[in-house]
Each structure stands twice: as structure tokens, then as C-alpha cells.
Length: 105
Image (cartoon, rainbow, N blue to C red):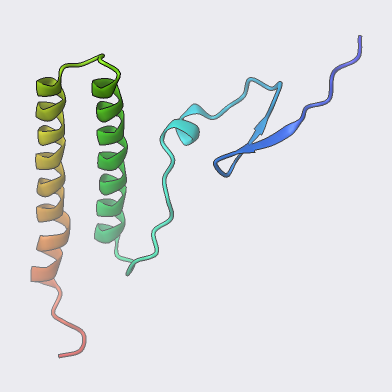
């Protein structure tokens, strides 16, 4: 029995072998964009939190639109995510501004 050759395809910038069944689900379902801003560990961490917030809000909106969750539950979940993001900003970004003086006065 001969193996059928794998056909390489690309989905959203991710190389996928058609018959492999070896799809990296996390990279496909939760893509993370590159960070082009000023690099500090705090900025990078906040960017990751911001991308996760956007991905989760997108999923919640899809579930609500599809009738899988009621609008009130969607609102409460998004509100909780928003509060978590605000807390992340307060801890990572706002705290960073207090500890680092401006480079060019």
C-alpha cells in the first residue's frame, strides 16, 4: 500500500498538512499577532492580555449571535473580561510610568 503524498496548504499564515491530522489547534484557534511597539516586558505582557481579551470577546459575541448564550450573560462575561484587562493595564502599564522617568524631558 502506498502512502498518499501530503498536500501542504496554508490557513491564515499557518502551514497545515492536509492529511496529517497534526493541526496545532491553539495556534489556529488563538492566533497571536506580532508586537511592534516599544519593547518592555510589561508592554509585551499587556499586548498578550489585550489580544486574549479580543479573542475571548469575539468568541462570546459569536456564541451570543448564534443563540448559545443569552445577551445578558454575554454582557456580564465581557464586562468581567474588561475589568480584568483594566486591572492588567493598571498593574503593567500605569505602574511602569510611575517607576520610569521620561527619557527626553
